[in-house]
Length: 347
Image (cartoon, rainbow, N blue to C red; front, side):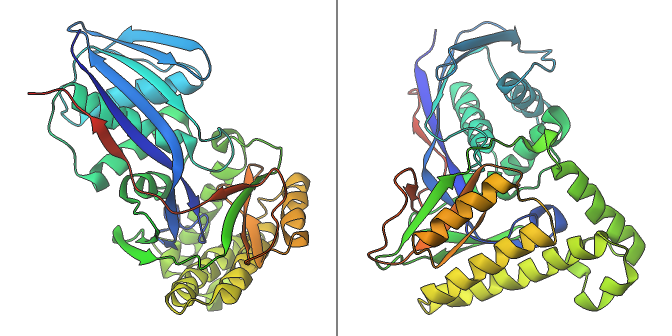
């Protein structure tokens, strides 16, 4: 068995701009310090063997003919198939997966798994590294075609391109990624678990994406990036509200960048609150448990708090001013570095 390589990929938070990625819009995510670590050792055989440490579960399958598994196994099997389809010459590998980003929390544990496993498999095979944007697309195909969640590229790009103390302005039409410095200045970003897990493929996520596509068809446009608020009268309910959320979210992203550039945390908080109201009322992805969690953060003095991730459960995000005391079960997060190979075999 060859020497082991280790790769790490972070989870992410999204400061603002939800459900905009698959609509060619704008978002402002960042990587966080928590994530998934994958150790990989080449075996010289034509099998992939996997141990998921946190679950104490295993998987094993033929390298050349992976089929869909169940749960987390689908991500690994789909990733191996997509890497092979992209021309990456993999080798038989033993994988050990461990992580500290909560699953089903809206912190993108699935993208962290995909990215970390991809980097580890490529490094173990001593294959050429892929362009990070292309790798993000590949991982997204795993979500779309193997897992069945019609997500966009936000999670993967945030995990791959994160920079410490920066959020990423991502334009999903051009796929341009621009780091924006985020000076917390004594403020605190926290996530709070609503106590309700979400699963994108099983929730209303795919339905929302289909509604956006139908709105595009009616308006005769390629994506909602081209839509305007003046066109809402051409759409039936709830399509008009779905479009209003996307269009207004893109504008809030740009306003958030301006607020960060001038250090206006109060305005940033107001934008978080406006984002939550839009996600709750126009996009309808909140739940009573999510609303209760947002309320707890606001009661603790948060300048703003909102649903994070696809919605339908998971964690909520809050921005607390200096001196405010977060709920005891809240977790402090800050912008961290992106995915990387921590160790690799010598040539």
